[in-house]
Image (cartoon, rainbow, N blue to C red; front, side, top):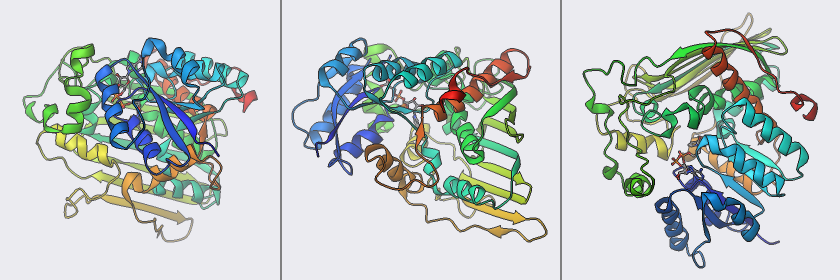
Length: 434
Ligand SMILES: NC(=O)c1ccc[n+]([C@@H]2O[C@H](COP(=O)([O-])OP(=O)(O)OC[C@H]3O[C@@H](n4cnc5c(N)ncnc54)[C@H](O)[C@@H]3O)[C@@H](O)[C@H]2O)c1
């Protein structure tokens, strides 16, 4: 069988997981065939990876405005979309309309308008669109899905979901393009679409009404703290970051190490939302981007009991150069050993199930391997060898899952803009297409 051909658009940090996989573990089934980006230095970085892996000849390279030519001339089976969030919709729609599959990083798009365009394209195309919701593949999140599907706590009625970003990882959204809502949709879309997707998937339900509040309370130039030094970043200290973004700033003026307390931040760092689901469950959700530790807590109550997941990814943050700490996070965001195991709040994961009239039980989780506890490898298998492995939990996500997740964030953004008014989640036509 001939190997499947993948073109790449957006050759920044995230693309490498997919690219490396096609040059390594999945090389027998797929190959990269073209590169497209607005930034020639970052394209060149991928060209070097290709050559170093023994790839034959340089890959054809296309500037962003020649994306259509790339699809026409290199005839990929699918395009891997790992560009800035706000560009995903155009690239996905064009691929689908030309019979090319799309593997799109989260968030699928940044607003309701993008969701509508992608939904229409997906419904008129026979080419598939996959959204890479890697959090679903993390063993602990998969375990929650399995337990709920088995009815471990009965019918779910309430979810409380708290996501806590620390002063390294959280701050990083305010150094990069994500700091502008026009690029990322803000953290309610860029970050929380992971979390809204988890809740949608866990509950097998769709959000109905969203109310939200939030604002910029820590980063930005309104009230910078006295202690700013730990928020600085020395790109040159990390060879990979430097190769991708250091000299590349000369091409397009984009700086990856912007001052988190500088002007121009248009996203929130403090957010809360209240969501009613169609089958009646309620979700209370909170996200902060400047905590002294990183992780998340989810409590799910059902008619038969309660399930509680607590994850401490990094129990405290030493004040040091952010590039080292961001690199640590980039290598394996779910690595649980941050060397702080002796702290009062130790790194690690706890999953408890407690049925009515019974003591709580701890659920054993598989050993957390590298790459999101082994989840990345499973995701890459599903992407590059679709159907090769059974998927009883339904982890592989399509366009409708991507749309449903973004629409919660988009509704939260709209609610915030309207002073916290409830906003209905709706996209005519989507439900009928499911
Ligand atoms: N699932 C996850 O856990 C996860 C983790 C990281 C990033 N991501 C997603 O991956 C995507 C890329 O993020 P990243 O961290 O690699 O960012 P990045 O800034 O490193 O890379 C983005 C790339 O897009 C390019 N680009 C900008 N505008 C473009 C345009 N109009 N056309 C083509 N290319 C353009 C940039 O030059 C850059 O090379 C984002 O959508 C992000 O949400 C997902």
